[in-house]
Image 1 (cartoon, rainbow, N blue to C red):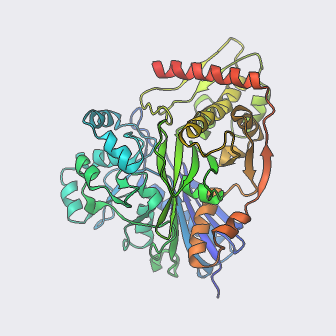
Image 2: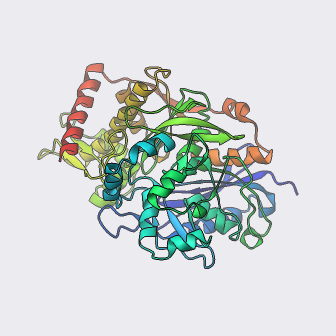
Image 3: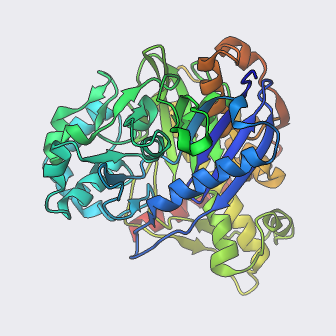
Length: 497
């Protein structure tokens, strides 16, 4: 029996998904399962690592049980994952040292300020391309180690390991045989020198992190091990891994310098391909690895917004003004145009280009007549405003980019015509929504399938990318600038509190 399918694992912030792609890179089976979010204190966000593993395992088996293909017909597995989320586990028992600390978690803000005052930020920026911020894995890992007396000793002895979610899943999938990651996930830890392609001994020393606990770093398309026979029966090779935003960049075929994609999930993440030359941001964006193939990294400028789709979830779960996300768009259409309500959704601080972990969300322009429709419109508009902040910073950092590049979009919120039209209006540029919105999983699948020899090379893959709809600006220029100026005033007021 010839293996011609790819199993893509998409382990996200709120759910785990498994998708089976056929030889034409079309989704033929899918399964999804949400898991519990833990908020033990203000600003703390945690996951139970066993939830991540068990939901991943169950969704993979559920996708296979749909009968489209058997495990014997899976040629390879590709993995994409929520980035920066930090897990530490004992390799002898399999038990974790507490819950996973999620990328959104802000508990190490004070630690970051202390390290910055000690002069560590310049080293971190120079070697990792990142900022000294609680967002990244490094200080989360230090926080865990500081609270377990013998953890560092056990790590140096090789029995305690650190990993982002991809490493944790691969360790379980291979029956504990392999401890690896890929360059894109390593680049988000604040411990990896993206220029030398090695873990930074200097940063690890400064944070008192034993290098022995860090995974081996591989290309995005490589041999990451085989699944244990007890998982699916046949031993399936794992041949593709990339962090979720980098996988989306690959899935959007943003392979040429100057191409930009923005993914709208829980947060929003825009990446600008800068080619084989890393660009140091002067506007507090991140220099990161977009993907790495054949030992050569391709770099990107990245802007990270912590709250995008999550603001719609807040309307549903926090305020109770909608019962499902799709209602937001119809509500926004009914909003009173005379009301200028602005939501700054800094629920977990603000990311790029402000990087303020302490500020919190605010609403401006409320009147007695403000209701659910105005709140829904303001929520969707906040995503567009934040995206423009990122793109303007990118244009200032990298002069090779055109003033108004076409933006390729994906993620759950990209399905909203209302949100995408406003996005095009406020950034004054075309917005391309692809025919295949499963770009994150597709990126992981292509990496795995290309390495396994059943998917086309990069040029042919890019040639097959197709647009479903292009949104073009229709807003009056004066109105655009007036509304963006109002956003700026609201943002500055939020940051000043």
